[in-house]
Length: 273
Image 1 (cartoon, one colour):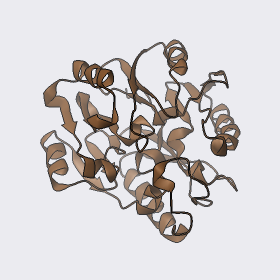
Image 2 (image 1 turned 30 degrees about the vertical axis):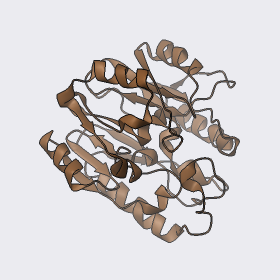
Image 3 (image 1 turned 45 degrees about the vertical axis):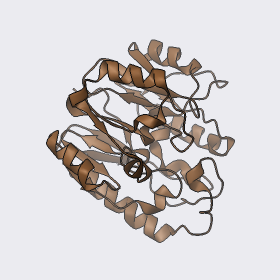
């Protein structure tokens, strides 16, 4: 087992009660909490084979709290809690801030006028000394300078242009040893140049439209293990060629809310020693 520690939140109150991304539309009445619970348990059990899992208490009337990637972002003993752009998720903020404080993290008091949605839009490169940081839909670029200052690390700003991919972790997944699994059409031209200038061709694993729609990029990477909802045979072959073992865990109920494996987790051990 690795030294990784991952935060999750049980889906006791999970539902689709509003529409804040395109995936949620039309799913208000066809989500099964029983199935969601089984799928969440399966993901937790699979992840626990490779990492320590920490859980936090879910709260009534906060259906998206299950998506702990949006609690904030962690670097060493520092954390930046989210300030959600959708007002529907703002009541979650107090609970995430309380959890970080009670668990010994130094918390940045980010200006509440700035939208920032945690590890959904902040992903550490697994080889280079920089933090990939998204903007365009949920995180505002004004947050990037504050993130760089507080963590004392370089930030590479990348802009999302497709509302289906509203956080970078829905279409972009840095992997061990500097590999990158991503869906290029989700980003603007300058961002694609920024990515290509830092990640050499043999380290890029391109994800096509069908796999992106199955949230293949929304994967959890622990060492040489990749845990995701679903991947095509060609994508699995590319990952295997790069040295990764792929584990598929059905997460269909969470896709109805626009999330998958990565969205359901927050890595608490950044950077990896």
